[in-house]
Length: 384
Image (tube, rainbow, N blue to C red):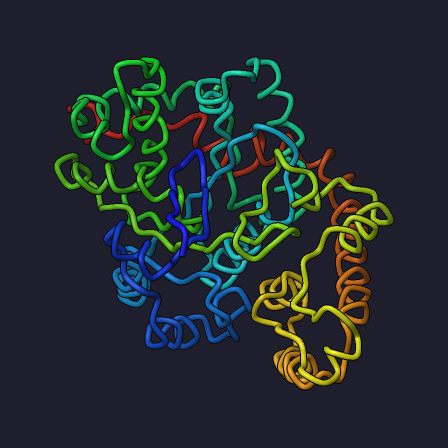
């Protein structure tokens, strides 16, 4: 298997998730923890948990214990606005929505327009701010509770800088270099940024739970080194895999490679054409050969997208898998089925996205949690 690399800014190669757990020092998300989640929420798990799209964690067991014993927790996640959001970006937000709804907790969503300006050399600051607005519309369209959700941009919510100062005092250059691979050529803004990213984990004096793709884990690794010295909990995390791009299971969907991605703002008809043209399947060279030998759904992007997000019916998914293996259906049938699912999703998402324009103020400034954060003083433990 080819080598792979996973950093907060780039993912290359075919990712071996078991090896990644070892390299990052995380813990597999076990059936026991999933069963405990069902027990505490009294709800059926969404497909991204029960089908192991979320596969790894840090201290999720302690989060569940905190909840069970009445201490509670809060959610934190985010988005780096470097361009349009695609289906791979939005799935962790749906998982976060499920957690918010079923545990009844607050959620903070950080929009890192500063990070994308610093780490993307071809992006101007006005570009990242423009994409921040567009991305926030997609996030609001997921359906979060506006009274329990605060969405903030780093360039606007400058209080985040005040919170980052004591954090930056705890992190040495050697620590940041070891985790992020900074060099003598790295810009000083890049070196400081991990302190900004860690700041929301201190918004409440409870344990934070961060549902996100595993490439963001290095940020929380640094936070966990010093959080307790500031009188706070170490950040907990739930790590998702990457949604494969249309062109093959091994590659991550990439916003910079349009042939790999379906964007949330794509015209549904054009999205269907893109899937038909580019989606890699597990089909054989000819229809005759596929009927005789069967297809290979484990290599099929179409099946993987159904498994991750677009086919919630477990029985229907298993029947499709077996029919493919047995050569009873051909790839065109599955592509048409996925296209219909994706087009219906896009139409509904884009309708809600339009409605989100009227909700922007509530999530960012005037909602209950937003007002609390704008008015709140910097916590005493961070002032010491």
